[in-house]
Length: 124
Image (tube, rainbow, N blue to C red; front, side, top):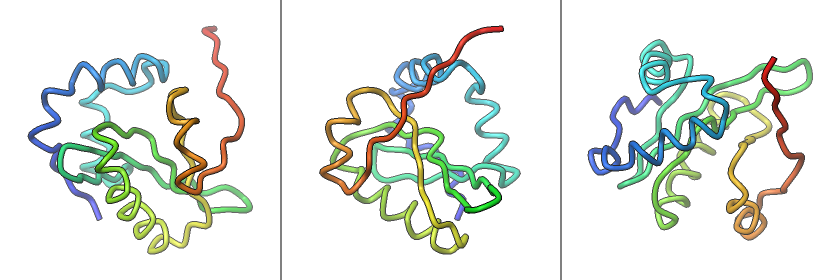
């Protein structure tokens, strides 16, 4: 599944998107993400005013679907999560993981997620 559209309503969220990319270390910009979606390197899922971008990562012991980016409204998250879970099952993944801002840590356990390690970065 590769929903190439960014929800039209999400265009007004470009500042939110840029803030998320900044906080993640600016490893990608919107053009990079759209390009990776078009090649299948990343996958796009839309639900109303919300958007999730994933990528499949093969590790020696697991196939993981990583939620690279998610933005939108809390009310849309169950629908997005359902789409990502279905995709992960179709890919033979045994884990879904995400790196998110601090605010997600409060909500994650209520949705069945375990809060794990924090990500630390430094510039070289």
